[in-house]
Image (cartoon, rainbow, N blue to C red; front, side, top):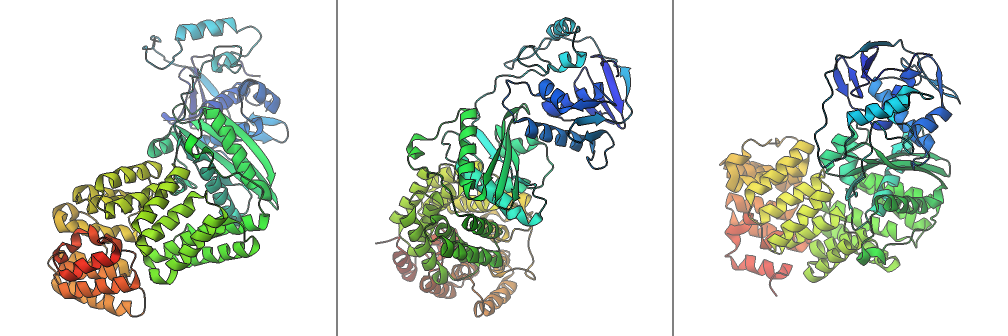
Length: 626
């Protein structure tokens, strides 16, 4: 057995070296960030290189009894992170060999050398708890007899010794992101199930009124990403990260999760849950409750009585619901229709489950955005939402969908505002609720309230293109064009090819031509109808009237065989100065109940029409003037 490493030694293996004094792993001199447990694991393996380090020894040295972390998952996670840092493989190992049912062995050659360390200065006193090097030396001297020196260095027994990687008192967790659960089923077709479990867990944790929980759209950006947790936490602006995995085998489900302090990379909590498929909602509820207790969060008192109680669900119905949500989230017309079919099957199978009706309402609302005439689907959406409310009035997503339909289709402002307010009350962490409420308030001309709401939505869903699209729209309706441009620029950073972004961006050219000149300009050749209308407006404000009129003629032909938003056609004609055609298209928008008609009151693109009596009549018919 090799002699224990000195605190001043540097252990070298392959292209790597471990500086024992600085507790740093480096590759070719570049530091590689490791969390506390993987680093302890590496040191213990190096100190016992060539020998089997048993699971029992790892348990007693790295996960002491007073630390609440399930050992199997903690060891699996720490080893996975260590192997990732070393670029190692469990199947064909270069550094760490798995010895089945016993433990692990470090198999690569290791050399050691003394470090050329300078005298160790006393650390500066700051607000964070630090360990004096002199105290460390005293601890090391006192633990030489009867223990490995590395055990003293790393403080494996946290209960009985003052340790090297000192744990500071964990601050309250005020913001949290749930990363997409990894599908460890060995079956790629189960991705929909892993995503569904992630969604349910986010929904459960969103009930924590005192904790900001990042919405699904933003966290899904990290599905399969290999970024350090600290970087992800910084990008999302959160204190803690919840990560984990899900394994489904037939009707059996195992979920393993761990909560990590973003600032220190320390494990705050970890646990595994084994349940039958019909108990997944109970599983999620139990997990959320355990996390709540660990981070000392409180459920908002106003929402406590409204939080739906988890119960068993029919496994087949649950599977249909997860599949439907998976397709709906993809957003294309075909995928939304696939989702609707799964929700229909779910309703046939379990007609008393409100979630499928709520999801149907959400699906019809999504179709009305760009793909089909609102008159063809939003009545169906409204009936689905009302049925969902009849079965369960406490689903925030139902109130969001119904509020949007009352707003965009019924043009019933008081009812729309009531539904959005109820959605926020039920789930203060719903970015959709805050986003829709913000857009609604902006179109009512209540700009300050609208901006306040959209800022909340952005804090909950910072990487959502939809939120930033609508944030730009809120600022644009408030006639703050420079801020609108800033919001739309953010989307280009997230997704340079997002269609609706470009459809919105050209609006800023009206008063921000110079600022907008540097923005990406899509070509008309591969544009869809909505984008083509935007490009038409862009050409008009750029002085290319002939090209704008050619594109409008093309749009008119498209409208005879495929849905084209009449409102967008009207705004393009208005920008070109063709008042009569603009008013004709607005009249058509009224008849088709275009979902954009509530923009009439605030949209700057229509300013040239406002003095016309026909435009004033349109305002009355939409509901702005009684």
